[in-house]
Length: 545
Image 1 (spheres, helix red, strand yellow):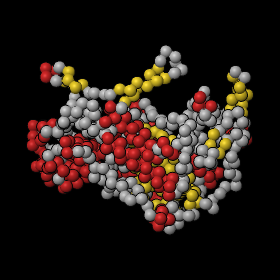
Image 2: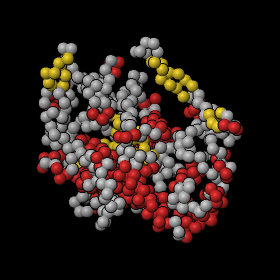
Image 3: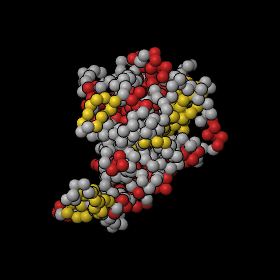
């Protein structure tokens, strides 16, 4: 399957089963694969497939941020993009689409108009579920303080998050004073939102070993011979198709999937869409790229463990009633100031003080890596464009704790559920986090660190938690939905690890214990270690337990 074909919205009866009355939804974290795109590299031009596709009308609408002579004022330069390439005798020419188009031509791997359409629709489906049906998120927002947005450094992931957010909260669902939302990114060297073999040497070593194992297993099989029978005539030098051929088998799949998702002007010969062939290529590619997560704890730790640590850390923060869980990663002590403060945002704390909904724009390798690391991808196909995973954290309604955070002085609750923290009136923050220090600058008193008087769970492993910290996690449950299908983590089936009567609601303690086993203590150090260690584990290290 190339493009995810969403199911119809849940019925009232389905919602009652999926969201039991005894549970209260507390936190939702979405990982979404970007929408449809062009191939990451031009391939198979010998079939008549054009190297440039005219499916990117955003290229006519681009705008750059411009700083004028007055540094406090910024403007935008609107422009259209055209792509220049080599012509005859290496003379520069403007690249054109299959019908002579110049102004909508896509870069390799760029999000297309179709990709924007499907990610916008994803946002609309999320809104229907979490706003209209469940009432978990407000219908109208005046800021995005309760929403965490992040994307990888790859542009199609960022644009997909933007489109999805727009579907979740269109202009009609935002107040006139709504400020610009924060979207977090990382440098490539720090990126853990996808398996980062480009900046994690040990993971690159392991992924090559598993890829080579797949090549050894499959290259001389009847299945591969069938692919060669269909496609060798189009391969360079009419070579056989192989896991490690040029292009690689996964590269062939990339072009097939990208062409299948778009119009008739960009199609391969029909033998590339042979149903049996696509089943073979999908099965082999899934093994090549993702078997390591199923078999090796080190592979899980380096490829996806840091991201899973982030996801579970937010869950633990929510369970601890730490309403600023995630504040450091969304804004820190001084995100706004100036105009932002004047609009009720920032106010010395960074704005985002109680994350309820998170969306991260990522990739197919992220989604499959996450699910396989949890033992929840058995028998699945390669994630289609615009696939998504929803991590949902629930609390049992009879699990109220003795002390609930109260609405702080200076923190005004709006009718739509948004809150703004007033740094000039600390209220309960002083009592809960040890008061305000005497550090003064320009006559102003500044708050001490939020973590100064309490040690939070964060990324601590379960075996490092105190009895009190363990009790903080009681009564909380985690459920995973992949493309609106509930997924099962094997270790959650164990007695005592799930909600009574439903093994898909994993206790937070059990879910955290499973993930803790492959969350690295120091990802960068682990990436630069163990180069002399075996590539494959000496004994089974199955995922999901």
